[in-house]
Length: 596
Image 1 (cartoon, one colour):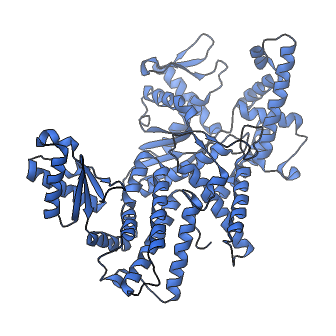
Image 2 (cartoon, helix red, strand yellow):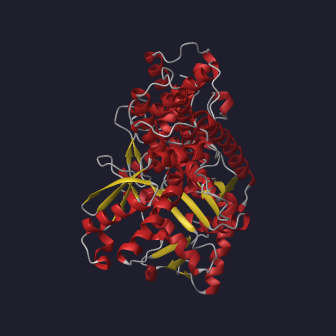
Image 3 (cartoon, one colour):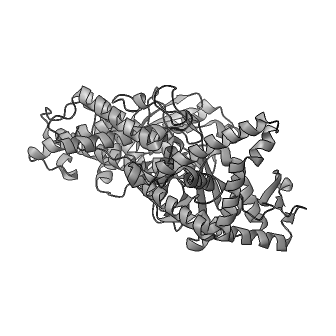
């Protein structure tokens, strides 16, 4: 932000004038002052003790006195050990606020020329989306929006795992037990129907393993020799050979699943610019394996399987192609990486995938580097932790996986119950109430999953997430609705507020200044969130802004203010908060209601 740049320049000048220390202003870091101390920005003096030949407190005192005397922006200062806390003049905050009001694009980066592809969701076509997929989808969508806000050109991609042994398992079970059932005949979403047969396969497969083991076969051997597994493997081979019956069944069941996925994506508010399908990428991956063999960077074992040796990279040997010629995940990822780069020559390719795949992406990057691919260096794994639920809070399918559709519906039901109890839907039509419940449910769910650093494993508590108090999506949404009501009242009173309507206001209450400080920080927050690929930075900002505004709202009157200019300023301040709450929540994929 411009104010920080200006203060950094003033500090650079002061260091030169007082201690003959030459430091470029761009190298001077300013931090927000901690709440227990007076000040807006803090400068750490410890790094300069050797050059200055003085203690950190002496340096801070000298710099503070110099800045107070020579920098118009600095009102006062205090020194706490090696920390120089600087208070900014209120007139400077007011000037910045007026600038904000006139800048529709404040906080958003200029076009960077950088291309970034973000791959997220990546579902399997043998089961519906689950709770882990929700964190994945929300992360991918939000990171994409944040990178766009930083000026990058972004393509949102979805790689669908539409082939492989796991898909054949649900196909085989349907073939054996389905009796021609369809989504229409069973009134079931297509992805749920495919998932049902995947579960049936697993059940029947385990029964066969137990039967073989009971007859004296080793359990590990039984897993390989169970008739259902052998049939599924045979089905995969037939699929790769293009067997018409198998391919037709595959197309039919995948078609059902895609309809189900589309409905879920629409309901949770995420989208994609490009879909990739493993069925279309694995052959290209096989070509890259052949290329690696020809270059001598891959090798064949006696059974005909192809491997790469990554021990020099601190990894180990990795299978790239099975002995029977079928591909593994890394094979198709090699093909997909090339397709993605051909479609969209990216500077960075972000894979939003759970942390259990950390090793896999180290291998992918290393393999592509060995092949000398220009896009290898741009591969970035945005790793995230798993999501747990408090036991007994919500029904889970098979006791292990929480279905995304069920979770979303439960969140909507919880939102309805909470909202009706609080009486926040007075005057709403049934349709408006339904829309509000969905908005609050998705706000609660997305915010709770995004406010935590992506790398951390987390516990999702549905009841806690939808509370209208505390660090939750509904608290921020309610703050926006409260401001929208204030702005409607101002409109009804015929008040048109612009920068000229509070020309004479130069001083402000502490609560007002706190709000402006939050507003001014928006640009730095977007930049930081982009660098860290962390929606949690934006979530925390939205919460702190809402909290600062609520304190202002509790302490200071708006419409009872007798000074017309002070009243206009407070309405303008409210409007800016509403805008930045709306924009920051939008970067998280969250809508904010106009009334509640």
